[in-house]
Amino acid sequence: MRIRDLYDRPVPTISFEYFPPKSAEAEEKLLRETTPGLKALGPAFISVTYGAGGSTRDNTLRIVNSIRRDYGIDAMPHLTCVGHTQADLLGIMHEAEASGIENVLALRGDPPQGQEEWTKTEGGLEFSHQLVELISGDYPLTVGAACFPETHIHAESAESDMRYLAEKVAAGVDFLITQMFFDNSFYFDFVRRARAAGIGVPIIPGIMPVTNFSQIKRITDMCGATIPAEFERELAARADDPNALTELGVAYATLQCAELLSRGAPGIHFYTLNQSALSLEICRRIAG
Image (cartoon, rainbow, N blue to C red; front, side, top):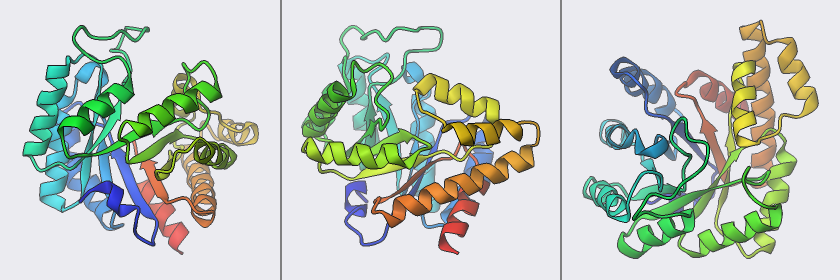
């Protein structure tokens, strides 16, 4: 099913993000334990990330096809410009289409590990809107893209970031998924500004439940997301008590999700870190 059609339904969507595991054992656990647990929630779709430099291309497509085939859940691969020529990208999309995949998340992507500056591959693409144009021009795929409520970490300004986003959406984007955030006001303000800029596609909030203090500090430092001061203090106070920190993380994410949905967000996209328990508990509390 095309993901863009899911947002025409009168009920909010719930979706999840995986990353390709590094070992066969971890992949087996993801597919045979995590996925059945999440299927009970009736997810709209599961997206699967694409490693820097295209390092997980085969794993990403294999996991997407397994989720679709074995569990009947719509699944969407991420696709990045990094490390690929245009011919490479067309080949990947041809492979995806031949497998029956109908949706793709188009991203510029991060530099390969150890490389700080983003460099265009010779014969490749430089910007995500070019990837969107390439997909939309040659393949009948639904195209999703990323957006940044707190502004992309490399953007010149919030205004220029929004202009680039509008350009990307005009190139053929059907829906947007936000980077994680921990202050809902960023999301609501971002949606307001996007609508004012003429961006009318669904904007799905991305939520990451916190389970590890040092991990979330590392992630937010890399992507530029802000942890509210009071929440950060409470997390730090529980940093050495995993159970207490996880309970706080679940409670906080539950309140976030409840407010987002009550104020009209079209759904929630959970960054799962390949775990199901926290998302299951949050959804149970929201429904309860």
